[in-house]
Image (cartoon, rainbow, N blue to C red; front, top):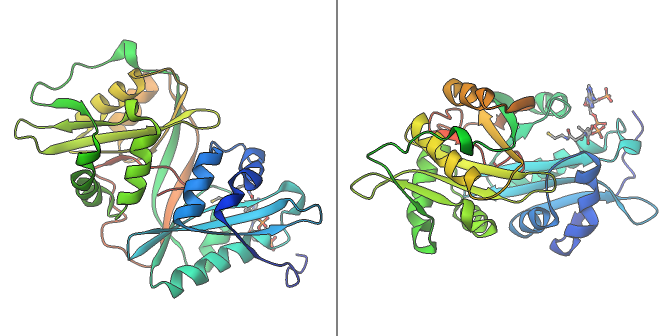
Length: 289
Ligand SMILES: CC(C)(COP(=O)(O)OP(=O)(O)OC[C@H]1O[C@@H](n2cnc3c(N)ncnc32)[C@H](O)[C@@H]1OP(=O)(O)O)[C@@H](O)C(=O)NCCC(=O)NCCS
């Protein structure tokens, strides 16, 4: 491995969303400039610049409440791989995370996992990425005791509490951001007492609309919410579903959805419940947690 000691790590400030976006495009990822801008604003990015002034590598640390930080966008341009840049940038994010008193979590690609294992990350659970064009024709009837309605700004505090119980993440800022990206995909399910029993949010992506997070009391409600969000406008869609949700996975596969790859959710340290996605039917995205 070539020495990276002389490689300068620079902070990627929030004006750099457009400049750093080509890195995720090269990797074939779905993020838009708006995603980068949100993450750089809410978190801290680190990267390396080549002689031509372009970003050649990146990493990002996104605080998720007081106890957890999500590490993402670990990207190295193809010509600079296997030189240690990925590891160096990841370590920079970890230093930042530890200094802030937080535990690091991430969703690893197959390529990323070999870097994370030796650094003390352990597997929590596998996630499948699903691609599909729509589900409308196969919609299930809405369960009779459930009412669906669009998410309103006033719902966000309660939504954040419901989400926290399902995801174990404190992420009101993220939920507020996502609910404004595609309001027509943002739906709440309520029971007859007006208690939240599920929700879905969506956002536009570079190649597909991303549905997630999706939290729900059970799989039937999750499927109802997915149908509603997908039906609100044309696809294609991507959705990242914890593999233990077998009924939902089978439902997607029966509708022609395909899952060419997946992620491993990993953490370096203990956050109680982070390893249990029982009520989390789709994550926000590997870049967001
Ligand atoms: C994953 C990625 C960031 C690695 O960056 P990198 O700078 O090449 O990584 P490093 O040089 O620091 O590699 C560290 C170690 O990880 C392992 N590793 C890295 N890439 C690997 C691969 N493709 N297959 C097997 N092991 C690999 C090796 O052990 C390597 O050490 P070695 O080169 O001495 O054998 C880069 O391949 C990339 O951008 N991939 C596409 C995007 C992606 O998947 N990012 C990870 C998101 S979780």
